[in-house]
Length: 196
Image (tube, one colour):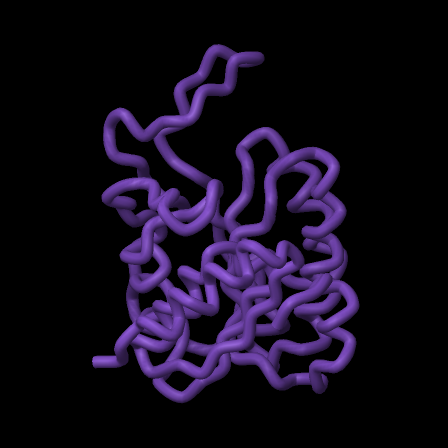
């Protein structure tokens, strides 16, 4: 759906979502979105289900504090970058070889299959969105953390990677995007995606 997730999510029923898997914007002005994400996830997630969010390294302490007010910290994992795909943190003179992924649960987490806490992203996929991530990374975690037919929610849809992956994996999907151009691209991409 096109619009601001903070408004659109108000219509979602309590305890209706099986997995929140998202990649919010990382810039400082958007950091409060992580607090909103955790608060809303605490309402819409079914008991024992997870909220998984990628984030920027620099903001981990603030994000952990914000999200921990509403959900239970479960784990930290990451997206490993291929060589040459690193981001540069000029203020600290660090080449980032991975992207943090924070996992939170609503209460005691339900059992899931054994899985790796880090996964190699073959490449950044900026074809659909300037902040896009690779589909194989999303596919691995959505497949491991949800079951066919379950409902996955991404409030920051971007270029639609999570939606396409859910269609391929046979998951139901709900996503919101505030940028009309990105939303249009995601819709087109989803129409062209073929389930197996």
